[in-house]
Image (cartoon, rainbow, N blue to C red; front, side, top):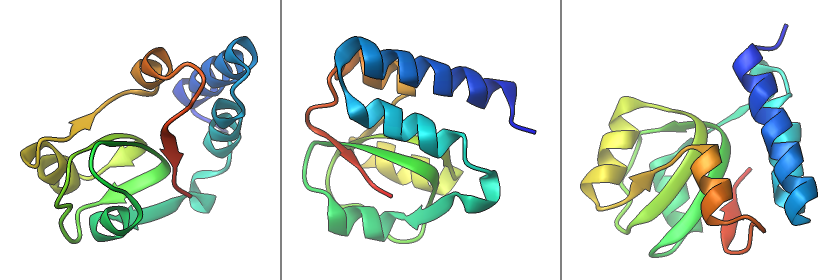
Length: 115
């Protein structure tokens, strides 16, 4: 059974996708409805390899704190470890919710979807 919060998030993402003609939000909703066993994990060192300064990043899984991220990013993820959150914030980055992400980037332009 899927968590009600996840179902609500998927509905919001699908609505934003239709409203803004942004397929990235529909893809993220699809990831949200997958069983938790099928979701991926990613370490900060891998995010650092795949991103650059001031990127806005979405990861549909859990972000783990192994490694460091030497540049600022704005991150939205389904789950994040305390150590990863602290390392991102300490380097001047931000953690935002999916609602804030949609508000700031309604069409999804400039948003990097990892996963």
